[in-house]
Amino acid sequence: MRIAVVGGFPPDKEGEAHYAGQVYTALAQDFPVQIVCLAHRRSHSVPCVELLPNLQVRRVTSPDHRWRRHLAPFYLLKALRKLQPNVVHFQAPHKSLYGGIYGEPLFLLLRWLRLRGIPTLITLHSLWTEQDFALLAQERGWSPQKRNLLASLYRVSHRQYAQRATRLSALVSGEQNPLIDRVRNDCNIAQPIYAEFHPCHPNPITPAQQSQAKSALGLEDSLLIVSVGFVRPDKNFHQLIQAVGRLQPRFAQLHLLIAGEPRGVEGQTYHQTLVNLRQQVPDPLRIHLLMEYLPDERFQQLVQAADIVAIPYTRVMGASGPMHHAIGAGKPVIASDVGQNLGLSEVCALFRSGDVDSLTLTLERLLENPAVRDDYSARSEEYARNHTWAHLAQLYMRHYQELLAEVQG
Image (cartoon, rainbow, N blue to C red; front, side):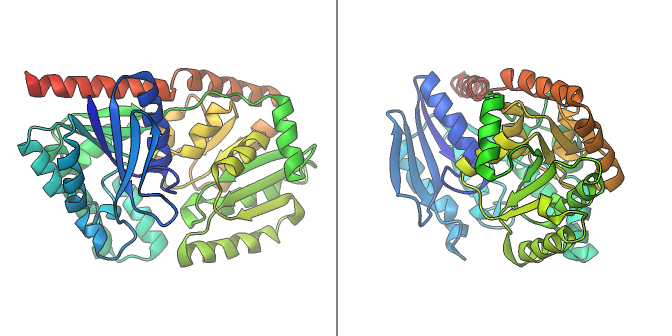
């Protein structure tokens, strides 16, 4: 079976790139298939590389170019005609990386594939609700007209993806996630949307590994909360600083480390907001701001060192990579009760989104009682064991085999 994948691939920074790297490596290792990933051209990436005898990455699209990104379907069409795949899998095509606003130029390519009888699977990596659009409009000062236009285009584009693809899947957090039904209803999508549970890499951190990671950070003997993500207002790091500031007098060893890359002017402005807030807590030296892009090794070090991983985001349209990495490491996770996080309500300690009092109380409950932290660690470890990248690779193979059977039958 020849599988063509359209989507990012490491070392691209997009979340779906890391996701693709994990799952297609597992798929290539576990099944006798040929996989070619048609990824993005980037200055730091070679045009073509063979990672395994049956896994190759080719860089064909130009997402960072002002107008060439709109020509993505033509670059992909040229590559697909040469490859002659049995199945084409699109990872997160609903982005301006492929032109338009939600990747609309790809509609032409999907139609060509359908006419050629080549089945397609699309994995959506984010599910937006009306509340998400309202929050984003509030953060960025959009007019009601702009918000309504973008929300309307979102609904139309996702109906088109559902109609043009052979099968549609959505990446979600947890098995009891309400977002698929909500988005199907909002977008008036008649076709089924299959659930794709974000996997974990089960690798519980030992006390010795945690101690070593803390020492490398210069935070020996600390009670450490770690929160990571691109630095912008919806990550809600400011309320996390406020909550930890309230708790510092009670917990003398409590430290908070926030790490991530500020994106654009908005990110830089928010960074300065965090710097200012840091000066207002009782002990600013116990609030650490690491404002830079985190390569995998650095990110893993921070998670290993953490006693608690915090995901305080106010908008969670896509499954959080940092959250699932923390779950795989067996860490207790605290998260806002919004969007994708709702699917992990039995695994993570959820607080009321945007409510600093609720955040403070939830953190306090975990900080003052090691048994509660141990309980949430055990929940993480159990979830990770049952939701691995190998499990997702098996799901993909079932999709591909069913799609081919439909075409041949």
